Image (tube, rainbow, N blue to C red):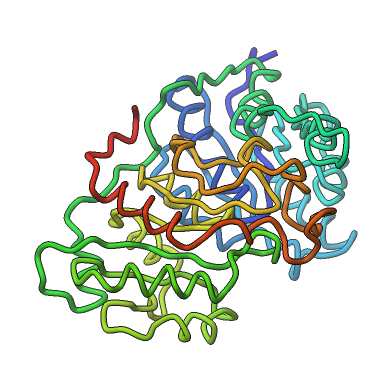
Length: 350
């Protein structure tokens, strides 16, 4: 099918974590098939994710506001159709991309298989079929294979180099100390079933802050700023100040470790080979959304027959309800793992 294909149009609009997961696949696609280029259409705010990849032309279309509704999607498709492309890779396959695809004629289209049946089997209770499903990275790669461009993912490095100089962090937070452990903490997630309880997370952060060699940087959205301030109660705990997304990525690239929920920050850190200690409740790494190249031993979770209760963390546990499955995770489990990562000679590609 790839005959005469020179530019592939890629559609993937949300969410941030899912778009971040496309980055390693895009990098490998273009590395392994240098004869092609990619036009990547997504939310405008996500453009910095792709700034380090050559032969990607990013097109930002805000389909939630400027191009919302049927008429807005028609206008978006008109803009896209002005760009030469020879094939379409729909990595999203939602109503919006289905509508946009209807405006394209005469080009091959490949659509992601989200594996809904096996994900339902993994999350149902009882009669769960507990198994490690295909990763989302592989599902993305399969879309390009169907277009004639196989992408080989095994044992590949992170798409971007990890920074060891720490200069951006030191400049941002006015730090002069030479030897510090820079720990990123992203305590929030889109859905409550994916968040570690506030009081327990506070214990984790305060315990880490007791070590003067640790400097903790808190990550969150503007809407979460008030909650983040409740954690920042010691001089070596700081909130990332007003910043752009590009600034945030620079800070993340210089961390020693990231503590994250099953959320976008796990994937952002993974792009730079930063080890991530991730905390899992109603969701599970087996659903296919674990960070690129991350060691599964750094996932903090308890094996319960009800887990996972959902793919995205948007449903309460059928056994534990709104309390969720994180009540069995004690703060020491998290702090011990972070200290283990900090104290080890971490080989990200092992």
